[in-house]
Length: 371
Image 1 (cartoon, rainbow, N blue to C red):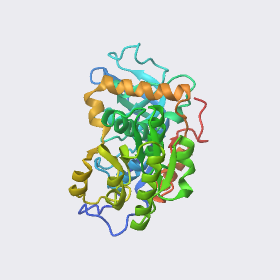
Image 2: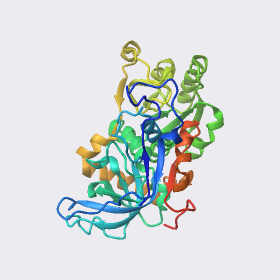
Image 3: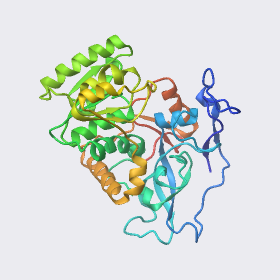
């Protein structure tokens, strides 16, 4: 079968493991192999496993960071990238009940829920083997391409909003990086939960994406402290106009950098929460003084451990997300689709800071699928 392999980390010296002066082109560390042995189900060891023929695999910013060696989890080299799989069940172990999964079902699978998932890897292959707990039926009417980023984008957003933030109709949510995959998913899910949403983008050229996703207000925070100060003032005015003069109940931060201290801490209301989801602008020290004055909580938001320890609650969340996609509450979509032969372009979008929305790789040569 075909599989993409990451042969080395693009941003790290292979001998010392230290950062390179400049990262290698991401394309140079990835290779499409066409004679990889396909996985199979072993009668004794894989009683609870499922074989899936991959139709679409998601590629998002964390997959790019992981191939650079800059993600919090570094898989052993070489490895097959990708956490999100959408496809058809080929085979299942004897302990997998028919009422949950049947051969021929259209399914989504998340490799991060597998003990051998390696931090969410293995999806960019023609066939994947996963534990049945990681497999979820896809409702009829949803195209498989539209669910191929549920884990990287929607699970990350929903964990922050529901599990950590307990967001509801009385809340104001602020999300930065709102034109990216997690940012747009946060806007959509927060609106589905009834919240008011202010979306932040680095430049208003990106503002149409969160606006279409349902944001009540879109503001630009720029890339310097002068712009951050302006954003802070504009946020406070917008929050008051939207009926939340004390600020945001929850801030979903995928940017961090100087923006966190310059603006975000001032935007959260007393006893509100800031969820740290990512660090697109780099990691900066957090000063506790302003957090003390604001009576604000800062929480790291990683959904994988919680999902593995609470499988039924996580399955309920997944069913809720898929249900909203099926009834149109969430727009089920793939924003960028590349064929397997063009897989490197999916990673290069993030290398070029052009990643927007949901990016997927299709195993079909044309980049499309009827399913």
